[in-house]
Length: 90
Image (cartoon, rainbow, N blue to C red; front, top):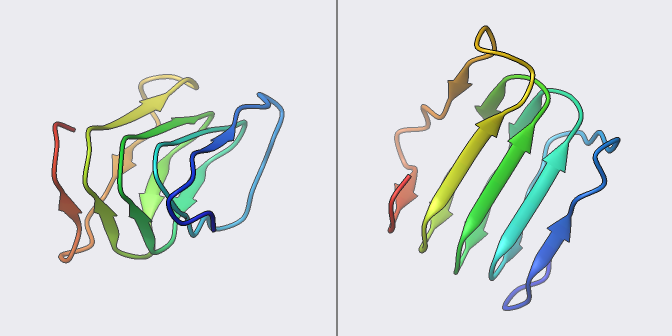
């Protein structure tokens, strides 16, 4: 959590558990499937994942959001929490 601050996690070999993020402009690169826990982003949000991208918590994103899968077309991007709120383009 870095409320009001930018977060950049861009080491291409990184793997995380469930990501719960609070920050301004956030960019994350993960070398495996990505699970987004409850996150509050006041700026832009960019996720680059080596696997599927899913959400287990609500995404509250004020700015534009990009979700990129680098592993191939068979990995899904599923953001289906009914409370997700995207303020910009997705």
